[in-house]
Length: 188
Length: 188
DNA sequence: AGCTAAACGCAAGTTATTTGCTTTACGAAA
DNA sequence: TTTCGTAAAGCAAATAACTTGCGTTTAGCT
Image 1: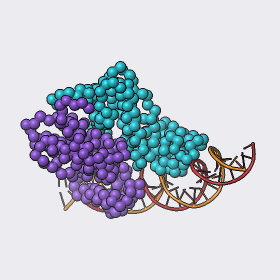
Image 2: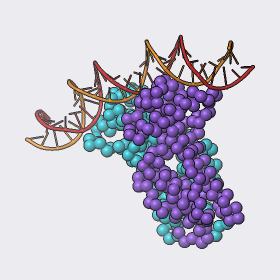
Image 3: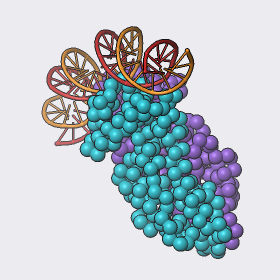
Image 4: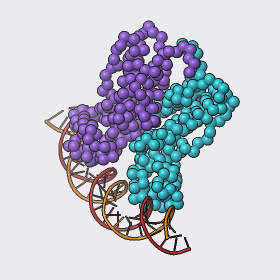
């Protein structure tokens, strides 16, 4: 529902949505999630709480939308000149971005308030697009398919961020990429 | 907080916690998450809502506890006679269990209401224990370390369950295990 | 320009959540 | 076994969040 999906996307709707998103982001800087409420956000956005409830349903859904939006506005992966380099650097960025305190919260928010699966889809697409872009830079190299890179680089990183307390040390992304591309004989 | 963590674990506390958990599970069978409320659960459990709020804080935290509990009570992995067989079968079970409609909700619940990271830790431990048990059955075989099996079997399965709409087809777990154990030369 | 309907605001009603205080019932010590 | 201290539960009143019905605004269409 986030960008302009309603049947009347222009003008007011868009303005209000933006105001609410802005207000939410601003409050998240200073307020813990437990202290956050819809009326609070609505007031800061200069909007009636009813409007927020009718458009988003509840706070979790709004937070999910806002969090998904953050992933939408992302730079294309940095170029290093080699496939392995691009993937490693991207993996480390991904790890930094998702594993930082806020990043972790955003991922959790996306999952928590997403009944339709739309916002989690956006996250998945974010990773997929980045990897696709990288692969497109090296059309002559033999590389694993996108799905495999997601399974063996992005998935482990997210698993650790979501399910274990310590965020993975930097270097973990590099190792995952090396392992994937190393390919050949491996003694475990 | 789930099992008997309070400073007064015996007797009343334990009874109430169990009653609340039972009531929650029962209501989840017939009621959608959006229609569920703390007062509703408290009434069915024969407990004052205040008690629930004071012990769990909010509905999300309670649901997280209840969901984590489901993973606690799990059978040891089935034995097939071979390492590859045990791992494959476990992966497929894991996929079935987590990828089913309810399973997916439980995972989401665990993540959504877990501010301390305790309940997600339980989920992670569940996977780790199962894999550790399997490896212990084949002490003379060369096998990847537990962490690597988690990264390349459990993590991709969970990634797909959480972030993509279609649940992975059965056979996906088998393929992940085969890929991991296949080891040798691979052409992608 | 005028029409239509989606989306917002307002106010009243309902339900959920918090808080201060009292009561109950473990658990330990006599 | 009785008594005592305390953590946890109950109760009731106050607050805050959420819902709903209805009138008003405004974007999109002809």
